[in-house]
Length: 174
Image (tube, rainbow, N blue to C red; front, side, top):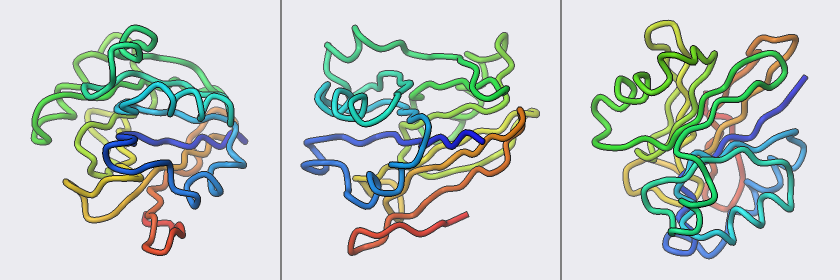
């Protein structure tokens, strides 16, 4: 079984000085980290890449060096499924429809995105969409969060939003 940590919109150092310890403790056993953009600074990508393998895209708030280093979208295979990742753009209303248009030819099994900071797991037009929310910012969301995706034998076994509690602990939300 492959266990994938999914994060987005870390916005360091604008929203937090570092990633929450409870996030790092929880994802330590994962096989891969997917970051859907808005690191803000390249040091965050470097720190995560030293911690575990990372697949990532840039977001609209990322510094130029990140936008030159990372793609706007990526499609890859892991444990027998196809994953599409992009940050997203525009207003929260209609974001899934906008994102689905850029993956139409790829037909991923799951699409990971960020931008809205609002945690979400939703099916739309036969695809599963996952927005992990933000582990450091609640400006548009009710709580800090990230996602965990478990894949076994070419199938999505679990897809959870993990809520980071006050006091720096993690709790499965859905």
